[in-house]
Image (cartoon, rainbow, N blue to C red; front, top):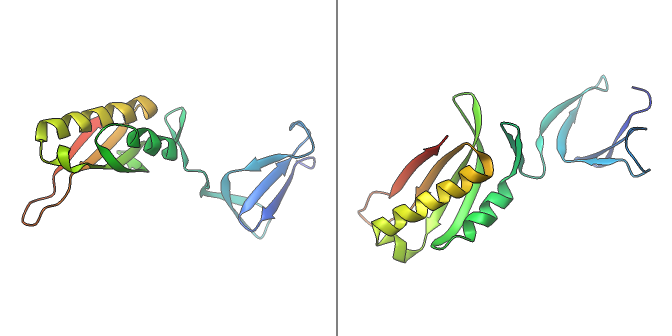
Length: 146
């Protein structure tokens, strides 16, 4: 389309201008693009940690922020997964030492975590790990909320 212009504003950030975009500033893309010699481009991921799960866009940073607001969770990391051909969100959470010593409380925290992620994304694979103690097997519970 001759009226559409795509330009690199930094070596890895792109902006697009078009008569269909209001204003003269164009639209900043959060996609990573690989430019081909023929002027075509290939999508190579995103910069903003937003993933598409089903028909929803989910911020992995927001999932982590919400998990950290739950009682008993001291650290959290979220990432996009592909499970059986479907996009999902996987999270790893670290529970505080008090929960680590009380399995029932830890299980409740894991279930709350699963519900929080499932509510945000609708489909999750969740790995929750407790602290490792010398000689103990890692405490891990795998939950799938579909």
